[in-house]
Every structure is written in structure tokens, then in C-alpha cells.
Amino acid sequence: MIGRIIDLIGVSVRDPGAAIAALKGLGVGRRESWLTIFLAASVGAIMSCLLMRTLPGAEAGMDRLASQPMGMALLQVGAAALFAALVDRVGRLFGGTGRFDDALLVTAWIEVAMLVVQIPQILISIALPAIGGILSLLSFALYFVLAVQLIRAVHGFRNPLLVALGIVGTVFVAGFALSLLAASLGIMPEVFA
Figure 1 (cartoon, rainbow, N blue to C red):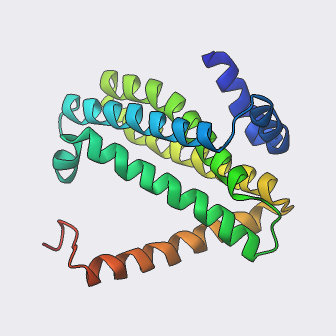
Figure 2: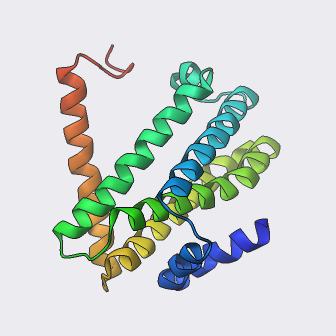
């Protein structure tokens, strides 16, 4: 099973259209995509919490979040839902042809792919903490490449550079909008509190 997932990660990078077709061939619909996101977020949150408790010198700001895996999982599900909505809306705004169900499928697949990458990353980080930062950068790079390639396939875009720029721009705009919303609700990060 893990071998098939790793193979599909490779296909997602090389030929994202074939990867999406393979996922659709498994009969993954909207309901299954949501269930996959919830499951991946839950397992990922538990693993992250275990890592935070295991590694000496883990970020102090993450202590409170690490002690609440359910809150961490809900935060990850919310982020995945926002990601899927933005993939759908922003992609169509720029002439893409994708649908929300396809964006949700891609989001669920990225969550599973990153979970599979996170397992060895955590084990190696526990055994060799000095390498943990490098592995985090590499997993972020994989996440970004998967996002670019799969969004291209969902919306029929040809230029990966423009998709990458669109993702970066969307992250900045969404981050700014969310920070304004948080400030208007009186929710401030711990750093400023």
C-alpha cells in the first residue's frame, strides 16, 4: 500500500493528469475526499504532537497547540478546506476549468502524500535531530511541487511558473485577509500578546 502511494506521488509530479485519473478511478468522491482529509489531519496532528513532546528544544510557541491534537487536527482540516476553496475559486478566476470536487480530491491526495512523507521525517528527526530542519524544507518543497502540478492538472493550466506565482500571490492575499479578520475579532498571535 505504501509503495503504491509513493509511486503515485512520483506520478503526481511527473504526470499530474494521470495521477488525478488514477485517483478518480478509485471511486473517490466528495464524501471520501472529506473523510480522507479528516483522517489525514487527525493522524498528522497526533504524530506532530508526539514529535513535539519527544524532541528536546521543540518550539516553545507550539507547546500549547501540541498538547491539543484535536485542536491541531481541526486547524489542519480548516486549512485544507480553505486550500480546496481557493484552488477552485482562484483557478476559475484565472480561466481554469476545474470543479470544486476535483480541488477537494487534490487537497485530500496532498494531505495523504504529505502524511506518508511525515512518518519517516519524524522518525529520522527523532534519531538525528540536526537533520530535521533539512527534512522539513524538503517536505515543504515536495508539498509546493505537488500543489503546482496538481492545480495545473485540475484547471488545465500549461505554465507551472504562473501557477507557482498564483499560489504565492494567493497565500499572501489570503494571509493578509485572515490577519485583518483575526485583528478585527481581537485574536492576536502569542508573539504580540
